[in-house]
Amino acid sequence: MKKIGIYGGTFDPIHHGHLILARDACETLDLEKMIFVPAAASPHKIDRASASPQIRWEMVRKAIEGEPRFAVDDCELRRDPPSFTIDTVETIQKREAGAQFFYCIGEDNASSLTSWHRFPELQKMVQFVILDRRDFKSKTDYPVIRRHIDISATEIRKRVAEGRSIRYLVPRAVEEIISREQLYREPK
Image (cartoon, rainbow, N blue to C red; front, side, top):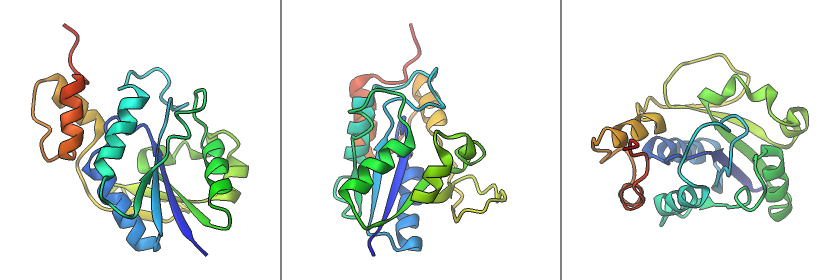
């Protein structure tokens, strides 16, 4: 049976922490591929300003370019927001019939997991996997991929707003998009 990972998130911006943990999940769980799914608008982050969905999709696409086990899917960008995980999983399941699915989420979202839209159904469709880059060692019934990586999208946005370098925190192509689009700058 094919094993496929789905990694949803705002990816605002995608950074090396996301990519390293996605690679670790592929290796640890023996996944054939990891599908990154940028959210058009996360139901849990509705009021937070972000780069446009199209720019975030471009950043993910560029960040994973040349990585054979990584793919990006724009299914959430083609739906009206908010983006519900169950709709995404149903869409990908239709295309990848017969596969076993692992839905990867950041440790920061684990505590709210049971409040997700149609969670009881969703829990039957996927095996949740917690990606913990802060090494919190919190208690969970789900498999955890752990690696201490002190990189966050919040910190990256803050550094850009302050005019500080983000070199080595994000892939070079992502850094170029952030610069080109003048993302995360302080309002003048």
